[in-house]
Length: 124
Image 1: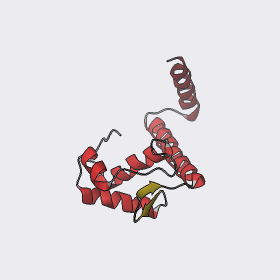
Image 2: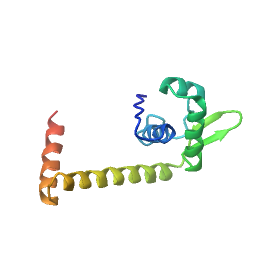
Image 3: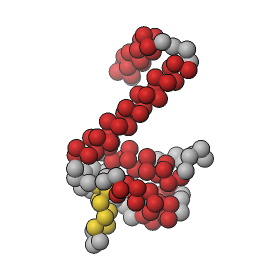
């Protein structure tokens, strides 16, 4: 996993977002065992306590389960993961619309640019 820790937001919240993306994208499949806190902390270059805090948040959201003898696993609840995936997509779309408005584009112009970008993406 590529970690891109920025200075503009709390580290633990960035870790939560990175791991969430890895889960919804299938990098960590349903029911799979997650690397240990220490392993992921070393990989991300953060304090293990900070990674522990991120895992606690993911557990609170129901994406990660802790089993005393088996460590941490991704939930097997596909509907929960799909709901998170849709929330993340909705937030990305909202950010897109806000950015386009700030750049001075109306909805029609933004849709044309989006369509053109999608066509170009298919060709590449």
